[in-house]
Length: 106
Image (tube, rainbow, N blue to C red; front, top):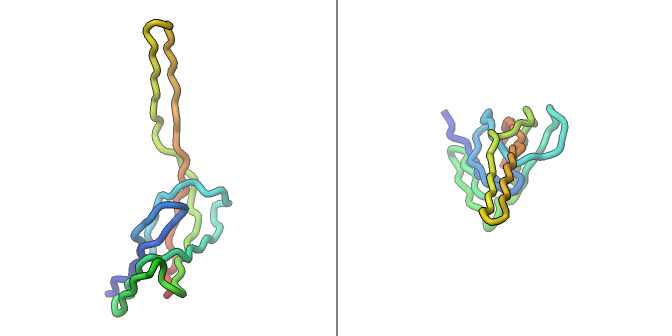
């Protein structure tokens, strides 16, 4: 059994990924089923070979498929100013993109 994994920069955040993993990354405007590749691989472990980049591993690439677009739970923001009699409620739902890791090359 191989322990192939990589630490990769995905849309501004770093993830430790293995082939077949599903990750919830920042929103990326693309169609569901589209292929996306990431070349900012900071560390790569292929089971027999271990590489640490300075800052990235040369020739390493991670490919993924866009599985879905989701949104997080609603966060309520309530503002209250006593002397102005102001009550204001807002809600926010952060959008995310779900990615399935297909292949780790390097």
